[in-house]
Amino acid sequence: MELDLEKFFDRVNHDVLMAYVARQIEDKRVLRLSRCYLEAGTMSDGLVSRRQEGTPQGGPLSPLLSNILLNELDRELERRGHRFVRYADDANIYVRSPRAGERVMRSVERFLNQRLKLTLNRDKSRVAGSWM
Image 1 (cartoon, helix red, strand yellow):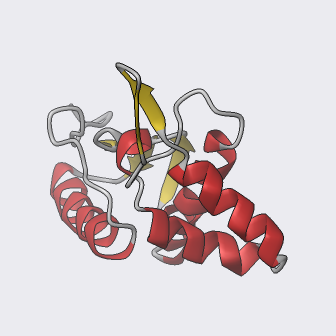
Image 2 (spheres, rainbow, N blue to C red):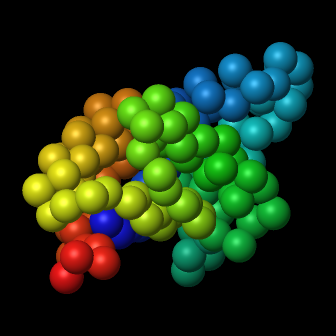
């Protein structure tokens, strides 16, 4: 089963991410600096607009922050006993049958939507395996 998160780096929810970062980091200054990094504005045609969601693409902290957030998906998959490999915003989850894959896909999508406020890219995500 292959998972792809839709426009992950563009759509990370700042509040959800910062809640998970705060579980790892106690220093309020670091938390405040991390929030400022996330909300740093972008300039387009001479106008600065504040970022409401997402992480700066290509920024040095974005991969670290994304792994802090997606570690929650890793923990959930481990808790459920799934074998998986995740790389950035993509993951392979290994299941025994197409039926199990469909069931896992639905439950993982629900977890991503409800807990992490992320969207599964249905066009790039699919149930596939060695049985095909």
